Length: 170
Image (tube, rainbow, N blue to C red):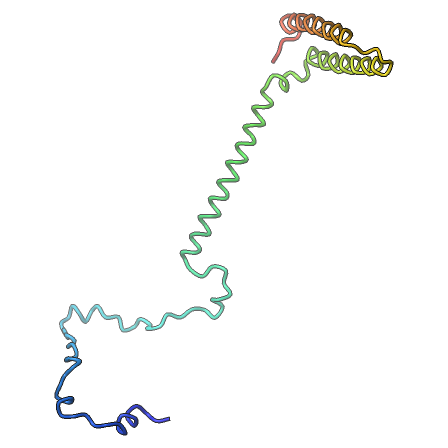
């Protein structure tokens, strides 16, 4: 390998015009101010190259910006979880305050639930038996529906009286 100077020496020589022609121009001059103010700004004790620990590449968080972002994201996630927990607690409290849950120990509510269950089971079984015998008709369905409506009206009036006089709602 030869140097650039060796390669340039082997090539053609520059003419006098090329040597005198200053194509690149003169290099800019550096202004030197040796006054007290400028010299005090130079910190000669600072390192020229920033150094890092040898385990830098294995670290999960490499910069302060990344650490701040991770902290911010963690805080946002905590806030989101707290809001969700608060919302669920509010919904649960609202459900418990509704009439059905607030009166679940009331004997009128329990009696009505039992009556509805038994009446539904009885009507369903009776309709099934009539169907198997081939005797289920629209006339029987109409009479059963009328009986259910009458029973519902009587149950409503009795329940209303019981709620007002003996077992008030919460």
